Image 1: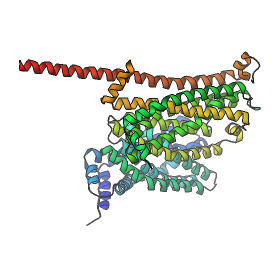
Image 2: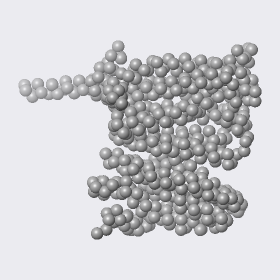
Image 3: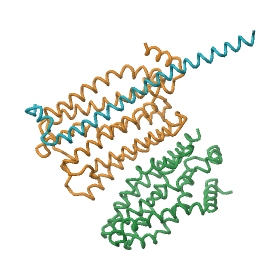
Image 4: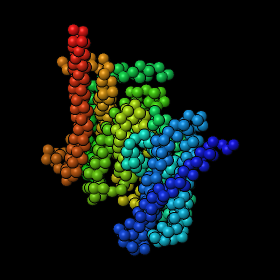
Length: 222
Length: 247
Length: 71
């Protein structure tokens, strides 16, 4: 018999695979936003290289917000979340598993697409490597912190815009450290410091978010 | 240890306590703010570099400091409410949020009005102003979350969680913005960040700071009472109280 | 006293516009939130009174209906 958490993980991934058309939408959005910038500010390779890291990260923030809602909404509406709460499994672990499955199904495709962005925005190789590193470490933070806000707004009819209002200010530090890591890479400076801070933020989010999300889910479930 | 707090878990006791405290906060806020501003505007010496534009400090710094202080107070109230299940704590939290937002706005506006003569533009992405702007968004987020629930009990808990998440983030935001600022801008504005303060400039500043804290306390108590009345409108004691007030 | 005349005080060494703008807008904003709170209190008071009256009316109607039924 498999562990219930593992079967939950498999179930979430299977569900995501069934809804892959819907999952593609935030990624399309991500690509479209990236495409808009060269059109908006001009195609000069140097300008693009300068604003590139910031543009990619802002686009990643926005598109992750678009898909964030899926984390709990459907399970909340069809009652399976309530079943999970009653199942006796630790809700914090359930949250962690769901966040992991969500990250794998929504953010990983975005990372796989990122070489295209490097070409679009004329990033150098060093910049690209650092961009992938910050995205790998940073996007799990987005999912973890986002989970808290999704859990709080899941019972509301129109939670979408509110979710962005709540989350964007909190994501600012991550944006700052991530883009500055890529900027440092562009000047071929070391960026271990920035990566270290992002890793610290990740560990902090990993430690605090599951419990906070579990609490928030209980509040929403009333 | 928390025994003394328990009576105030009842809304009626909380209302009575705030009724007793209200005039004290109001009067000390009025006196301290008038005294601090008058001293600062009339008697304090001008800054040798910035001249009289420096006098904006007497409202900018108290509001900037107290906007952070009010956010912490809000998060503490939320924490008390969540841990001990005390309803007036949530009401206090949501009473602080709008005042905190106004004080944050004051800090932002005075910062801009000080920036114009000093930097030549209304807005500079200076570390303190940027932090204040993000703080304003955090306040508005808490208020918006509270308003979108119909069940106010649930609203208080949800907004409370958000306030605590915000307060954990506040130091990180502050640090990151400061660091980002030194990365992108040179020493051009460092004279704004830490004006060397003489004693005769410091006293009115401290008095205004105290006045600002009392002002926040006054408005919080006022709004806490409103919140209690709104939530307990059908209780006999509220009805009796409102009838008393009309005469 | 730092300033020698009232017009000096208003001029604030040439920075008058900014100083008075900062203080003016701030004080107005700070007073506005007090005003809003007091206005809220007033409408809450009306709300409580109206609720009491409404309840009294409902009770009166019920009494009337009951006495009519009995009759």
